[in-house]
Length: 201
Image 1 (cartoon, rainbow, N blue to C red):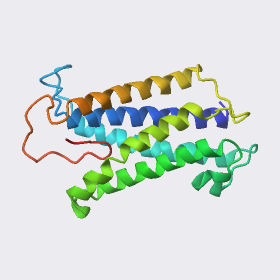
Image 2: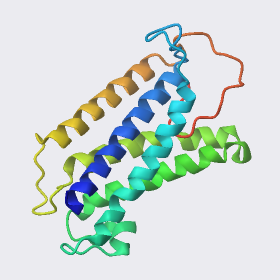
Image 3: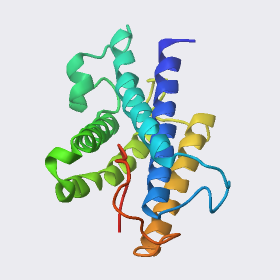
Image 4: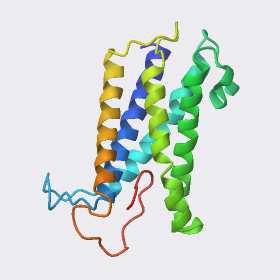
């Protein structure tokens, strides 16, 4: 496995974790019960939501760091933090960097929810949606071989990202359509705090 392969796998892992986190967050916002509905098991959705958030942030941070160890093309720390002049596809890399920064804002403000207050936390939490869009754009259009900037959109990794993007888009559209409804009556406000994506009505 080459460094480029490792970088690509980290990126795919980050995209998959982010998609799973978003989908779980949407289920939580709809007050979905895995006991009452499929799979009729006692699953801790809040715990899954939290751990997929940690995985998303860790993988998204690790993904660009691998580029610093490449001999060619050569990436500097500045090209990772502010990739406006990165060696290849600077605009696509900027989209990825902005997605990372938005995810960090959502993640950190979720950890500090009790300090910053629920209204501000709730507004900042919606940043997960533009972050997801930018993450999917970056994942789909990035050339994993860092050659000519023209990725194969029918490659297995790209198809995985495209399917994940379609699932998240469809789930978000369904969430908007069911706004104010959900799967069961709202419970008393004693729920655990999720870490990443938990849009509410």
